[in-house]
Length: 71
Image 1 (spheres, rainbow, N blue to C red):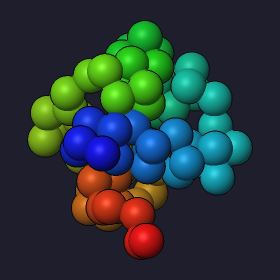
Image 2 (image 1 turned 90 degrees about the vertical axis):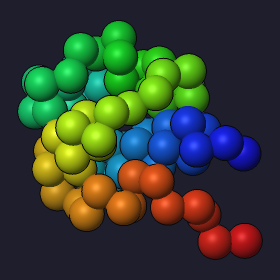
Image 3 (image 1 turned 120 degrees about the vertical axis):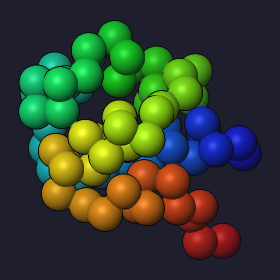
Image 4 (image 1 turned 90 degrees about the horizontal axis):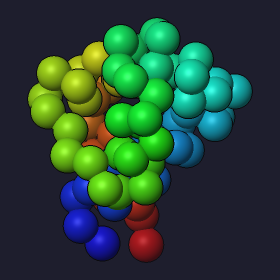
């Protein structure tokens, strides 16, 4: 799986664990909801600034968004 796919899966998992909708996370992070949808699907590239904003909104270290899942 490529880094966009890993980022997308981690983003979706962390968002759901916190009980947030894409709309809520979009508001908290300042990212458009359509961007979040594409990112979760692995179709969008994230800038470092976006990773940082999403991590802050999810209250995680930015590395959590790009960490490969354990086998």
